[in-house]
Structure formats: structure tokens, C-alpha cells
Amino acid sequence: MGVRAGVVVCITSFLLGSLFTHWIADSLTLWKSPVTDEHLWTAALYYSILTKGPVQILYVLFGIIILGGTTIFWSFNDLEAGNLMFDGGSIFLYGVAVIMYAYSVIPTLIDKFTAIPPHHMKDAFPRLLRIPTLDLASNHLICSVALTGVLILQAGRWWAELADSDDEECYLSEKVEDGDAGEETKSTTSLATTA
Image (cartoon, one colour):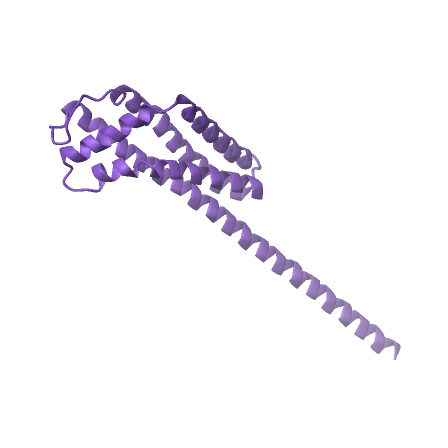
């Protein structure tokens, strides 16, 4: 279990970190008020640069995503109560992030940002790109929150298993102590009857 949980945490952290690299563009469109044309051009230029990267990066990213999903499902397959709750929630949140990225982020990047119109930073931002630019930032945020939820659930699972193992150790030590006390009582009783 420890190795599987470690793999899930490492992969989720990696994916979360890769989403945080988009903060350069997303912070300008989500958290800066008011959203200016200059902010939108900066974000669109960043997204355009992403589409021009080597396709092998996507293959590596998909391989990592598949490894993470496979590891969570493998851990879920143990069918223990903790796995059903924590890993079930992790599967749901991981799936939300993967589906959001695969069916919303990547198609939007490919459709809208492979070629942005020539511009100066002070030019008016095209209306056709405004909504997709804001949507990308929102989708990145949704994926980040979902992956953070996976990390929280995995930490909760670890804490619950730690508490269970502590309870089991206390129970076993009390049982051993009760067994030792019973033996002392028996030996004292047998000594008293022989004397």
C-alpha cells in the first residue's frame, strides 16, 4: 500500500506542478481586476507558445496520467473500507481533472491558440478569443482544485490507517497485559491452594 500511495502522491504532485506553470497566464485573467486587453494578449501568447511545443511532451504527460490512474484503481481494488472511501473519492477527483483537461483544455488550445493574429500589446483583444482565454484559466483552476483534493484524500487515508494501526497496537498490548494479569492471578491462586 505504501508504494502505491507514494506513486499516487508523486504523480498528482507532478501534475499539480505542471498546472501551476500556467499561473503566468492564469493569474492575469482570473485574479487581476480589471482584466485588460494587455493581460489577455499575454495569456493568449503564452497559450500559443504551449501549442508550438513538441508533441512528445504530451505523450509523456499522457503516460504519467495513465500511470497515476492505474495506480489509484489498483489501490482501490483491495476492497478495504478505507480504500473504498478515500480511493473512491480520489478516483472521482482524478477523473474530473483528466476529463476536464482532455475534453476542454487541450481541444481549446489546439482550436483557438495554434495561430493567434499578429498584434501589439495595446491592440484590442479579439472577442472570439476572449471567452476561450478566460475558460482556459478557469479550467486550469478546476483541475488544480481536483488534484489538490486527491492529495488531501490520500493524506486522510494515511492518517486514518495510522490511527487504525495505533488502535490495533493498543488493543493488542491491552490483551497481552490482560493475559499476563490472568496468569499471575492463576499462579497466585494455585500457590495459595498448595500452601
